[in-house]
Image (tube, rainbow, N blue to C red; front, side, top):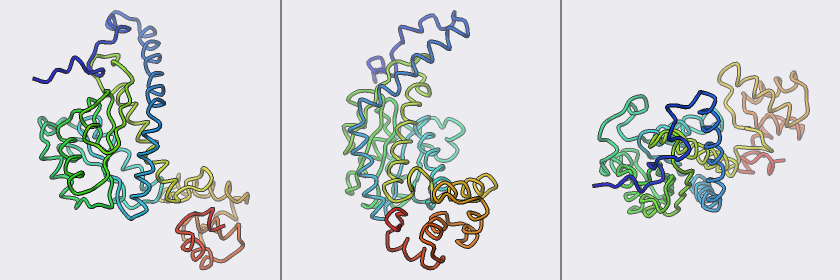
Length: 296
């Protein structure tokens, strides 16, 4: 029988033993203090996160995909991060993939037993034609979810780089993965509720993995998201603002350049800064493999 009591994520937090008797203010203070431990836990594993980002960037440059796999809260966080990449970085939706035990329905409701089946983790990767250009990130707060272990084992078998993100030391998924990230923020305010500190820890690590790997493949110029897709009014305005900040021009010039570049922020920036037409800007961007700074 699995002994959960030894796991940090399942231990009782000594600071919240009287949670049900606390005032709202007292509970908020203790939750806030506990949440401060999240960044501290991540700081301790920055070297492992760095290795993970280097690996992800290398695989993306080969044309591969970043694939998250998880169950429950961990799986939902992976799906969420994947869903945010197309509008933020202009990636095809197939470039960053989020797999969750139980399928899409599991995003909004619990699918009992799905996370306990390692075969499902393998099958979900087979369904999307996992290949050696890809990289698989296994997410599990407990660090022992069978679905994730099954996925990581299969990825290893076919030679795909693997990364694990867990919130317990010496995690089972960490023993399977090529790169193990075990960030331990300690017992939850509400015992065993890993949507709290463990969830925040995983979310912050995912922010690092996706954002900095996208920087690595040229999706960012300075600190601007230059591959943003202007698909609604807010994003159209953001695209204009990005061009303005990158080139120090007014809104009318930015609008004109974006119109000429067919909404491509990178092209508009190069057109303005190098005083070239769309065709020349596109050629320079192609020659620089999509890196604005190199094109300039």
